[in-house]
Amino acid sequence: MMNEAQVAVRIEQAVTRVTKTVFPGRTNHHNTLFGGEALAWMDEAAFIAATRFCRKPLVTVSSDRVDFKESIPAGTIIELVARIDHVGRTSIRVNVDIFVENMYSDDQHRAISGSFTFVALGPDRKPTPVLG
Image (cartoon, rainbow, N blue to C red; front, side, top):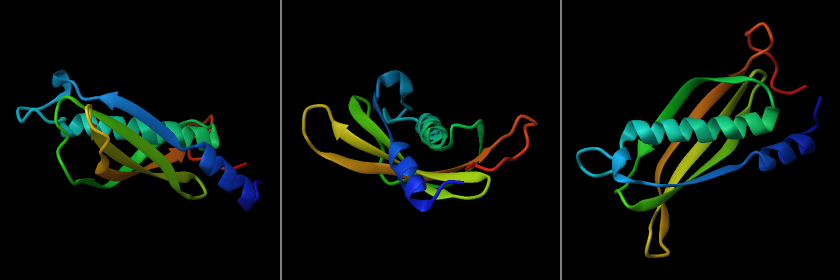
């Protein structure tokens, strides 16, 4: 079993950053990032962070309170940052923020945030301990 210091190191090593460009093919009729696309990107970044943490097969079991604070226009750069928030016995909760920045200025700020929970699966496809 891992001690608290080892868990803290794994949490830090699991931080995941993904950078993307919002092209018109990923936007809605308002020329802003389609919400479903943002959710898929967030789930993927969260999955990568959770997998980096435990190195076990995982499935998404929930997404909690995704706040779309601001729409993200086509032609911007986004950065998804996924961080482990909580480690349970068989589950991991990951917070994901999407930061938006204009291609031609230095301003970067949070536009969307949410939380995703994963469960680790054993060979029998049943929940298994995340650690150990």
